Image 1: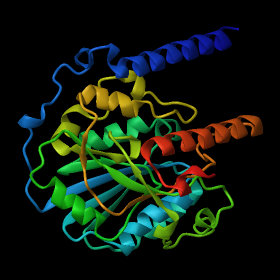
Image 2: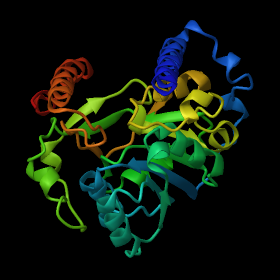
Image 3: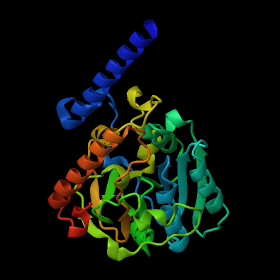
Length: 315
């Protein structure tokens, strides 16, 4: 009996901690309690060109999306900035392993591939990989993103121009372009489902979306800030392995710790593939349908709020 009781107590403690930090990140709790030496932008150096950028992505059962992201670096390689493409993955995910092995054999100017395996329970808490990358990075800037983001012609070079000399702690692209919520059988998702290879997007299938803060896949952090403070490194709760994928509430916690929602910058050519089915969750059919319904509602509501085009508001 003690084992189920201990698990119940642990689950309850985790629920309390998660919701405490969700409330804290709204500003109800001073961030200095957890990060007393919060960095100030004016103390950061402005790095001159040419810059080094590390892009950090996670992949668990999303090889068909990661294929697009890695393809974008092969098809439209940066010229004005050196990029280290870091992907955290679990060897249990065979499709992602095959995909990374394929792209690892492709030499791309100005791009270094970096595949980092993690145990499944550590991979599923995205803050763990992000924190490891933040503390170890040697780059001038580090971009925490998701594997469904794609960079088109000149996008990363434009980013390089915006970051040269920049002294902000956190910046984010003000605009991206998103698909509608794609179903599992959509040709865009099926195109990369069978075997590793280059895949291309059709920009006509995307509509603009605008942001007023550094949301999850659009967090670009000054390298000095990342190395010193990590990614929610001072909050042990966000560095604990988990058995199931956790919602990424730590994104807002990270912004709260840094004391900024981020500074918007103009970067063209950023695209994101939005998808209805979440392969990272393992749920029953009923729970899965409920989650998909909620995603449709959220997409319509927040799409209108951000002024997205009609393509973003149909599932």
